[in-house]
Length: 606
Image (cartoon, rainbow, N blue to C red; front, side):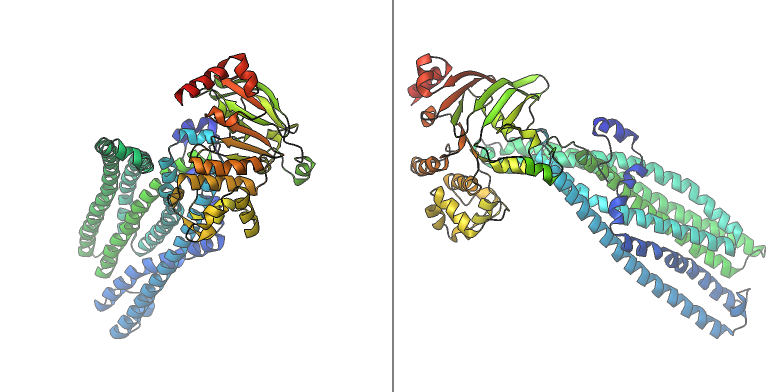
């Protein structure tokens, strides 16, 4: 598989990586189409024989016309009969070759498409399993390039490239055998001419490989820039950054074009070299062959056959050069895709059997305990420092504090989007690292400030691919007071949503997020500025639904508007990742600490 390398030495491995090791990573994918692969390989022999026999048949026809030495069964026939037989044999070999080329081309393309689909699926599965930390550091445009352009090139490595090169090498071997069988002196000359040509091809291909890697890196950068500009088009237009961004994109685009020019140069150099060498080979055959005819060492029919041999001998080599280019481009893609597949999955389930899963009891009341938790996005730069608190089952807690205090980070740690650097987090006495992620995230209902919507209908954006009946969907909508709003949509629950739900208002999108949480009946409800995008009327509507949802559930609420959290059981006040105050609204106001200061500032601002 493509994931066989050690991620800790990725850059060093790339320098030491051999083409064979890169190629070997694709073999398991090719073996999934074993029957088609075997069929395409079995066709190589008849293809090579048909290609090598044709020059011999043409040479025999010329020799028979000139009454020169021919094969015994041809010599016994009249000229007309001999030509008819040779013509028929030539037509059979041509027809056989056309059929075999068509069938092999089809099977090879099927293998390539299946390999591409399998690799793309594995890459998608791996990417969606990576931790949030990876996406914090990787531009989306670069990931899209790896999933599309790079993966498409991988299929060519094994099919158009590898199988094609095996076919060309097989043709070369059979052609060489036919030439040596016919006339060894001219065959030796043509064979020796292959040595410098092969060396030139290898040199140009390695240069092509280097240029192609840089070109794909520039393409990733260009796609990242394009994705960023499209996603942020509102800011681009509002702040009139079109000209500035266009200049940035022009610079990136020119770098990509420059690298593509280098790949085109090396690719063209191979074609030009082979074209020139093939013409020289024909000239050498004609010159030596003419001298040998004058010296009565060979006959005209043999020379004619060798002229065709010279053309056909360099044709596989020319195709070899073209396919080698596809292989080098594919090897670049293998390296880049492997970089992603070698990324370690940071968040993994530790339970491997269903019996252990059954032993876990998630039927508790929703107690949450942070035991001396520390966390850093970067080494030793702690944004959470020694958090130690317990939230009782059914208790309603609010997290407040200045920007950057660590409120959202606490939620990410609780949902296990990140692992604590030190300490542990318990839910009902169970370390969340011992809980399957699927069960943990079903146990927690999280409503974010920006509820992301997928392309599809309203119902699928509530169920998110899980099995819920229409009655359950409607019940969740009624419970969150949004059934009336959804019924006003053109097709109700079947209304199709555009990308990111652009045909809904901000409030409607947020209401769908509430329905998502309600239908899963979580033990713990987490609200991260969940009502920030709602107007006054909608907020009042959802507040009533929240009061119903919060009954019997533990709740953690992040809210910058302190007036919305006055009636929670406890308020945790955070500063620079540390818990500095804890208590009810009245207690914290009486203490006159950080919470009281924040509250007074908001009151003054309002």
